[in-house]
Length: 398
Ligand code: EPS
Image (cartoon, rainbow, N blue to C red; front, side):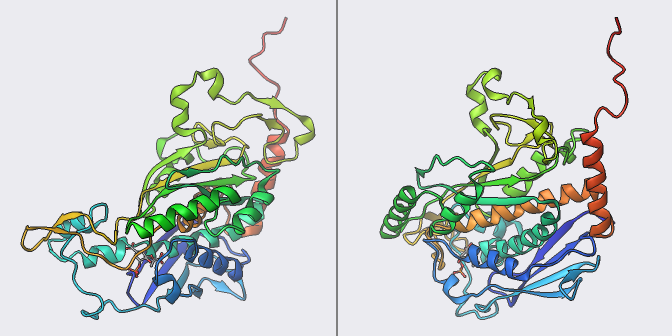
């Protein structure tokens, strides 16, 4: 058994994107249709540019899967780029005028060139296709634990929905999200978001927003408080901040914790024996400001992660910049781009969050096969339900 990890390779306009996932146990049913549906969702969202009309992202398995099931070997996947033209100088010219907000300036100086092309090819959001493929693959494993993830758009360009997500409303929210072309489960707000994106297009500008992921069904105790590297909230933050254009991440109430006293922040605990057989083992909360994570570990409540995506840094009207060859002031170079990719980012975040949860689940329960992993999980749940396993020793006996 090894740690569940993934690597990605591939340029935005290269021949393909390649994803290598290691550490997946044998015996996991791979739902290719589900993975492709997630890739398709990532391609969508009102405000996307011309590229998404060219591509039809689908995954091809090169290794690690036999007759629809994992065999415990490294899993290699490939997504073909139709718009492959990286060596064509005319259609993929050098970029000498860096876009403020993009990787262009820092990358070209770092790699000692004045052509930002090689930096931007990899920094491009095209790479997030690979994250979705890896995350959607990991969700095939999470199904064995009845863990589900729901992602959606909370705000775009200042238009914000206050919709509440709970295990009970999850399916209704998912259906409403799927009915919205901005992936926001609120009709009225979706309409306003579309208007904001339309206006940004007219203004030759771009807009960002907030995306949210909720994970349902996590057992108590994924992650660990014993070392900062093992804290699940820290790893989720790392994974989410690694998504192109993300500028902040919050768990649960997030920065809202700063303004409230402890009595209004921390979620009181109660026990309901009738819920003993659920993932929370009967330990319930009427609020979830902690976003399902305390001490870097899951506490049985839904895990709630929110990320901020900045507006796309490629503006049709450009921004003040400098020509890297002449050092003269010039406007930043325009590359075909999106006006708003917040909807797509919600799919990316949903899937990177899923991957981190799957990784943590395998750390706690992982065996070489799914069968062994399932048994470890069930045994743990059974023991946790039986707590205390030994008579308490700390009580003073009168
Ligand atoms: C992107 C620019 C556009 C986006 C791209 C991200 O690509 P192109 O330069 O080929 O038009 O469409 O996003 C994707 C290709 C994608 O798959 O999400 C950028 O500069 O980051």
